[in-house]
Image 1 (cartoon, one colour):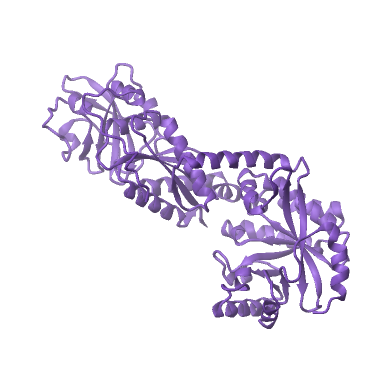
Image 2: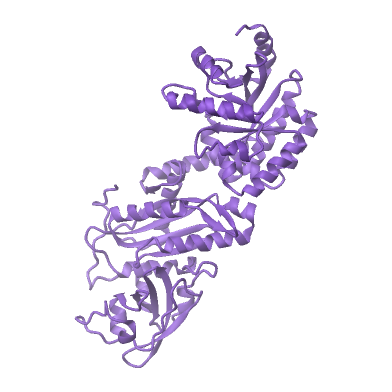
Length: 548
C-alpha cells in the first residue's frame, strides 16, 4: 500500500480563503448529497446558510423534503442529462438544483446561488450513460475541495479506460458499444461510495473523484472496479469480455488545478497498462520519465517501417513423420540505428495500441510470402497474427493480396493465432477463420496452454495445427501434470487430423519426451535458432544430411 503520510493535504480552516476552482465554486454553488431514500448525507455550509440553518442545526440524517420543502429529487437510477429542480431559500428566493447520480446510495445536488450561475452547463450529464460528463469536472472538483480534508485521508483522482472496447465496436457495431458503456457506467456507479463521483470523459474513458478517502480504501475500491469490469457482459445477446486498469493520483497540499491532478492519474494509468493491465498504480515521479521514453519509442516506431528498419528471422519447424524440416516461423526484428535490436515484447504492444500493427503486420505477411517462394516447394512459412490485425476490416483481403503478389500457394502459408483472438465475437471469429480456410491457408493455435486455454477450442474452431506452449516442455515447469496434458492434447489433435507441435525444445531429452508423448513436430533452439533469410538455404542443405 502507498504511504501517503507526506502527501496528505491538511484540512483548510473555516476562515482560510480558497483559490482556483474552489473559489469559483463557492461564489456560485452550494452542495448537498442525498441518499436514494431522500435523506441528507452531507450539506455544505453554503447550503445550510441558504436555508437559514444555524451552526448547530446539521441537516444530515433528515429527509430533504423536511429540510427544503418542495425540492424534487430525480427517480432512482441514473438521471436524465440536465435534470434540475428548484429550491426555495429562507428568504423565499428560488434557486436551480442540478442532480447527478453518484452510486446506488445517493445523488449530489448543485444549487445555483450566483445571479448568473448556469446550473445546467456547470454540472451537465452524459446523455448516453447518465453520468456527469467532462463539463462537470470543474464543479465536481470544486465540490471535493469545498468539503475540506479529514485526518489520514486524501482526495484522490482515478483515471481508467476499457481494454478491448474497440473490438466490441468493430465486431458488434457501435450500438452494442453504446450499450456496453451504459452497463459499464452502472457497474462503476455501484462500486464507489455515495460521496464519490464517477464521470465519463468521452469514448471509453472515465474519471472517479474519491473525496476524503483512506489510501487502503482507495486501493480496495480500485481492486473492486477492476474485478467487476472484468466480469463478462451480455450485450445484444452476445457475451463480451473487456477489462480495465486504473491510475491513481493524490491531490497535493494547496493544489487547486484539476488538470494537473488528472495528468498524474493518467500517467499512472499508462504504468498500469504497461505492467500487464488489470491492475492499479499510484503515480510516482519516476513514471514521467518512463512515459516520455515510451512516447519516444512510439514516435520512432511510426517511422521504422518507412526507414526499412524491420527485418525477419526464421526458426525451423521439424516434422517427426518425415524426419525433416517442414517449415519456418517468421519472427520480426526491429534493428534500430541507436537502440540496436529492440525486442518484440517492447514494441509489439505499442504497435497494437497505436494500430501501427496493421501496417507492420501487412509488411510481415508480404515479406514472409515472398521469401517462402525462394524455398523448396514443400516448405511452409508461419506468420504470427495480432488480434488487432485479425479483427480489422479487410484482413482476409490483405492475406489474399500477399499470396497473389508473391505467387505462394495458399497451402504453404500458416497463420498463427493466439487465444486472445478467440475471446471476442465468436460469430466473427469463426466466419473469418472459415474465409481464410476457403483461401487454402492453414491456421495454427499458438501458445496453447496459457491464458484461458481449453481443449474445446480444438473442437470449436477450424485449426489445422496446435502449438503447445514452451512452459509444458521446459523444466522446471514441465512437471508430471504438464506431461499428461501434452499427451492428451497430442492424442486429441491426432484424432482430429491436426498437427501438434511443441515449442521451446532445447535438449535431446525434451525432444525424445515430446516425441514419445505423441507430438508430431517440434520447434526450438535445439533444432534451430532464428536465422536470417540469407542463411536458410545453407541451413536446409545441412539439415538434409543431418541424422537425428
